[in-house]
Length: 269
Ligand SMILES: NC(=O)c1ccc[n+]([C@@H]2O[C@H](COP(=O)([O-])OP(=O)(O)OC[C@H]3O[C@@H](n4cnc5c(N)ncnc54)[C@H](OP(=O)(O)O)[C@@H]3O)[C@@H](O)[C@H]2O)c1
Image (cartoon, rainbow, N blue to C red):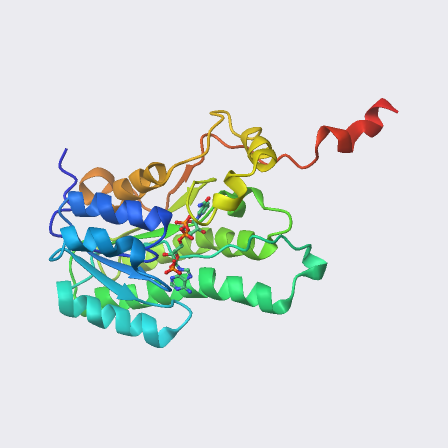
């Protein structure tokens, strides 16, 4: 099937992570030229870069820094020209849950700064890029989370940062068309996915049991599941009339298990 992504310049933030790496590989197979970013280590991208020397440009970028995001787009333009598609995938999650009354302002601000402000900065320079290089089409794909849909006790910083992706999408879908008349903005909400971010939880049997109780398909995702939805939205051929939409890739997940059965034993008293 022709996705029409051949020759497109796609930027994937967080390309060194589990989901970003899979999207990057799929895009390269489709013939796209990819700018893939990392923050701490590019190690996971090294082998792919050897195979796709001319098609993959790996760049370091910390999305909490406006200077670094601005410089990223300048370097990306020099390598492959206008950025046609931005997959705003980079993000962090804390592994140690904290009740809101115990969460430090520092933790709250750190998560919001990376996940929300960082996505704002990448979107800002992507739109500036579209203004600089006017063309018909463009696509922004934001990456949220089921935590933004159902909430997540002890992780209010993360769930808040991810639910904000909806508001960002709804505003930016109406702005992008002023820069690229066929421009689109969509959101992918992954559920639990086996990547370095979720490895600790998904290798814990008790945690996995709680997770699977909320998912009709009784399985968690692999990065290919999420990357497939992102690839679909990136493609003008497949999703050219789709904008302002959310695809939740979570096996039909519904809500959360809030209490273990022993915690509601009072019903038998
Ligand atoms: N895995 C899940 O279960 C799950 C569920 C729902 C939503 N998501 C979302 O899916 C996206 C990808 O997650 P993943 O599971 O692939 O996580 P991951 O494997 O931990 O990858 C995260 C990526 O983000 C980059 N990153 C972190 N901080 C950054 C910063 N300050 N500036 C720029 N880049 C930064 C990391 O770069 P370095 O590794 O170089 O630091 C890495 O490439 C995230 O937005 C995440 O919230 C994941």
